[in-house]
Image (cartoon, rainbow, N blue to C red; front, side, top):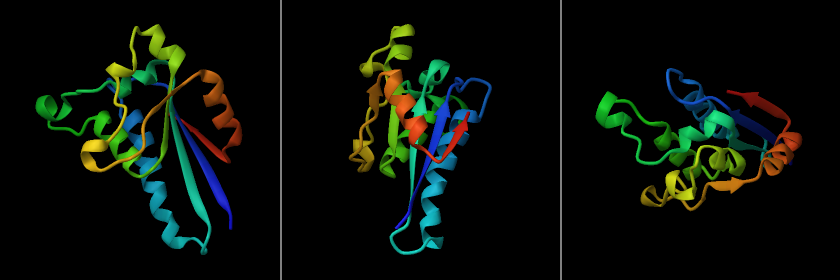
Length: 137
């Protein structure tokens, strides 16, 4: 029984870049590898938004309405639906004058039971130290 921990660190805004969506897409896709693993083995992903990356978590994005594209908000909800830990850096939210009321906090409307965790940067540092593979976006 082995657990492989992956960490995805999103530090760029979603404007003019696919990076944040790619981070979430890769994290979600990593959950499908379990069909290739031995019984009891698993892959666990944590996704953290820091710096300008916290802007990706803004709720009520209008990407579908305006551009006919899925929003990063919907990707965050899909990750929560896959029971991933999603961390948002509290200090960076404060820097932008944002609160938990401004960001996606859960995916209840699609059956998710996980919540986004607004945490201090120290908690994100702990996560980075615990993972086997850390990817920056």
